[in-house]
Amino acid sequence: MMKLWNQEAAQWRLELSMDGEALSLRMGDAPRQMTVALGKREDLNCEILRQAAAKAVKSVRDLGGESAVLDAAPALEALGEEGLAALALGAELAGYRQPDWKQAHKEQKPFTLYVAGAPEGEKAVREAAVLAKAVCFARDLTNCPANRLTPEIMAQRVTEAAKALGLETQIVDEKEARALGMEAFLAVGESSGNPPRLIIVRYKGGQEGARPIVLVGKGVTFDSGGYSLKQAAGMKGMNSDMAGGAAVSGAILALAENKVPVNVTAVIPAVENRISPVSFLPSDVIGSMSGKTIQIGSTDAEGRLILADAVTYAIQKENAAKVVDIATLTGAMARMFGHVTTGYLSNCDAFSAQLEAAAVKSGEKFWRLPTFPEYRKMIDSPVADLYNTSDGAGAIAAGLFVGAFAEDTPWIHLDIAGTSSTSAPHKEYQAKGATGVGVTTLYELCKSMEG
Image (cartoon, rainbow, N blue to C red; front, top):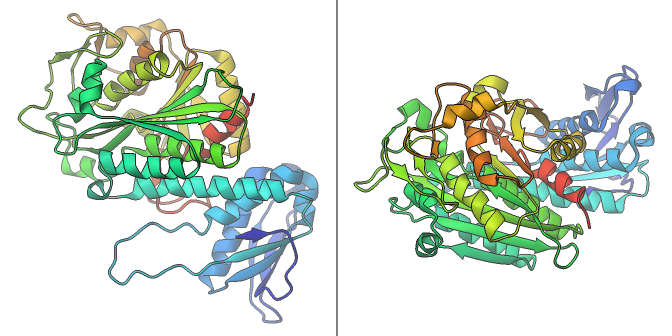
């Protein structure tokens, strides 16, 4: 919790300073002191402040502190309300802890950060607190073991959170999906003992009748690879293959709770990719909601199949003005950019510019990849409209596969395979496990389209 007033009774005193000086923490008159460098004044930005606040809070909590007062005047004079929001977000996320199912579960003690020297910014702090809660919601979902988050459980958790904020929700089951012609979605999920669910959440905060931006999030709650079976090492962590679905859930919840005046819909195809006597096979030719046919090169390239039908659903049934899909889609993207940067593809320069402006505010890193016609040819099939694998450029080819179903609708594809989780956090406000990547950027992107 963060409050905008000075509490002298707080256990710790924090001071922010710049120009090569440091963030100093002192406990009363005791000689203890820790420092977190802020760097030069001219280099100061919101991301530095976000990480410094997180580092400070973590350090105090690690020493058993339950409250601190921070004098942020110098930094906030330079960065204003945006800096205050960044500080609040970093401080809130610093307290995140993974859910556990231990018999002797210990509740985490609350921590209060009081801020002195802040501008009038109660709204900015409240907005950041809501956004932090949304990131933590996405992290919690992504960190769940597969047996604790089946497609049906995911649908329940997301819709319960959405209904609590008064949002419209809809769940499409396998029978309804079959009636809609969602053969690609069903090819992946229908053979599992835990049936697939298409989760739809609608937030109508903008002008009545205005077409929404639709956020499509991959929701593979476990990916064995199907008959193109993953090796044991490759299966580790595949409970987090629904991080894209978690990200769009968090983003729309934050938009609704902060009453951002925009129309946004989340569409999450939630499935398990398992092996059964009726699972789909390499060489199969399947259909899709769009009418396009797909030749299967690998059953482990399942994410693009469910996204194909979800994107079609977004356009045909939700009347999307623009579409963003976000997915832990390819190992190729993770190998290319590691855990630092999310690669993306788009068919619209103006929409891409909006994404990159949103990323500047969120502090998340994105890099646009090329979509030359030569790459599109890599997913041509001799017997179907599309092939679900390629001989090279795997991350680009996978994105272009999804883009084929967006057609002329302005579209962005975010591949978060490398950035959705980390074993060694590279940002102070992250924790081991799920990062909640995408929540803040999608929030800022939608917020920029207010109206």
